[in-house]
Amino acid sequence: MPVAVFRRRQFFLSRTELCGNITCMDTKGFTSFHLKLTAVLTMLIDHIGATVLLEAVRASAGREREILTFVYWTVRGIGRIAFPLFIFVLVEGFFHTRNRLKYFLRLAVFCPVAEIPYDIAFNIKPAALAAGTFFEGKSQNVMFTLAIGFFCLWLIFVWWPGYAIMTGRAVPDADGNCRTYADITGKEYLKWFVNCILITAAGCYIAYSFHTDYGWAGVLGIVLCGMLRLLMPEAGREAEKFSFVGAMIPLILQNSFEAVALVDYFLIDRYNGEKGRSGLKWFFYLFYPVHLLVLGLLR
Image 1 (spheres, rainbow, N blue to C red):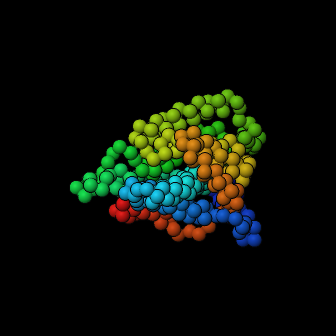
Image 2 (spheres, one colour):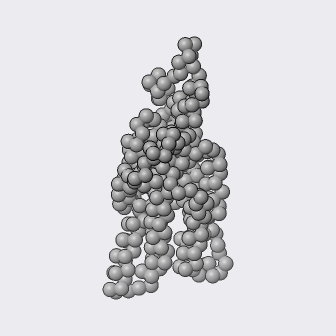
Image 3 (cartoon, helix red, strand yellow):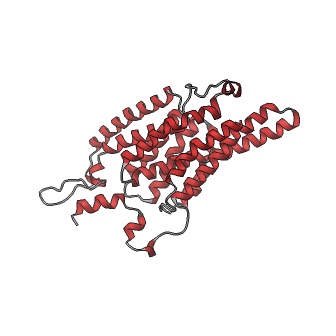
């Protein structure tokens, strides 16, 4: 197999496939499925607090209100765990998917699908809902943030100086040697950084202008998480863990309460790089709008 072809295939294979036999599979720790499941469960807990429990707090008084308020903030604290994990698995998916266009289109399709459930859960008051109002355009659901961040990262990746090397598209020279990461010049990196700033600024501005959930901080977190992976292509697991820290920085700058999610580092530290259980891809996509619709109606 030609070297360039092998490198391109190697980039898209999981660690288990690269080993060539099942004995080298890292069965310990958490798979991507475990991280997604943790994110979904903590998101559910958070949204129960932000909808049903919040209404209970507003309707209570005295000692009962104090207890419910304490429970409310505890639940919302647990919920902070979710979004950084979603960023991490999104970036993992970006680097391991065989078709980024399909991945992006799935995110884009669920942006409008989730919008009415999102509005019913968080934006529309019960009285307005009873009067037949189902849509409110002042803020948008988190799928918009994920889609914008994914698209920005895609553009940044394509323009990255090491793109041809990582994907096995580097053209051999007259001696048959392919370019390596060490051959990338500082001028190339500087030009790329300028493009990164422009692309990221545009994505953050769009998210901010449309008031998407997590807004500019969510988009910037996705971009930083992905960029750190690109800047350390041969660092392996260490790059994965360090990229999570990059994702957390803008979230904490936007809201210091997000610092609770730093506990995610211990989950990611035990991430074994495996996909885990398959066949539930659409469950994770559908869960978001469905659970919001149910909680919105309960509220």
